[in-house]
Image (cartoon, rainbow, N blue to C red; front, side, top):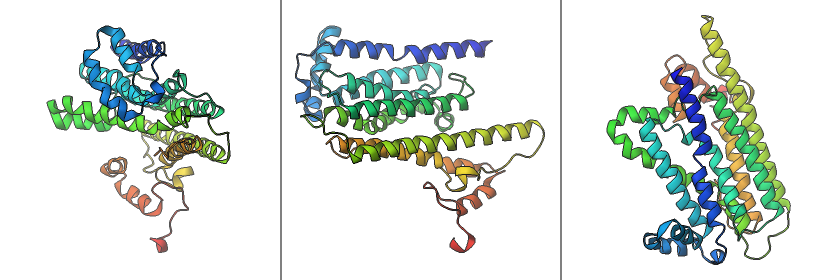
Length: 327
């Protein structure tokens, strides 16, 4: 009963947590008289101290409107993800919330850039938005399927290990390890959305060969990740059923795409982000893009089998299995 109550509360939390940030963003976009598009990121950084002299909520809104879109995204992320999520993690003693939002935040950032009053509308931007929805839908479904549709039941196993080994020091350390580091990664990986909507200053270039290449890489990456994650899910389910029936479980997944790469799902993710980065170049902007095995080896029942799998199988890019003479 308690677990069901917690699941309902955490599911409501996932839906409600972005609303304050969405409200601030909507109010921000009502201020269109300040020439935001004329400021670059570093100009905005120099203006940050002015926030301390802003008066009231409206003053903060006006301050944010005076910054570049990239600087505003970083400030909103720091306040509404880094700080708010960290406080919730301290109260719940779990960092679980950042995991599902790792797939949702890129969609929110893409919408922020697209909806900005000074953003340029283009077919390229429309394509990017559709693609990020496809990517996020697949990854979000895979996350909740893996968690058996339980909200907040467990956090990333690496963070659990840190919590046990670091004791009280984990509380301040988690702010940087779980949230600030995610900001650097997610804001950096989503820079192509910024480039698509704000580069060049004049009209965007027409769709061309680079856009076709970018779309192909993105969709191929999503497809590879989809297939490999499904194969992994079925492998885990089969092993769970074997254990329940008292039979020996299979030690290593080395069939399907996993026969050619030890991490085909990560290869698919890499293709997705590389393809997204190419959209940045196609828009006329700059080129802005791009532990697990130790855990496998720490499990005694599969360590020997996994070492043999490492010797025979490519780390990332799918390749034919190596023969003994090639090792």
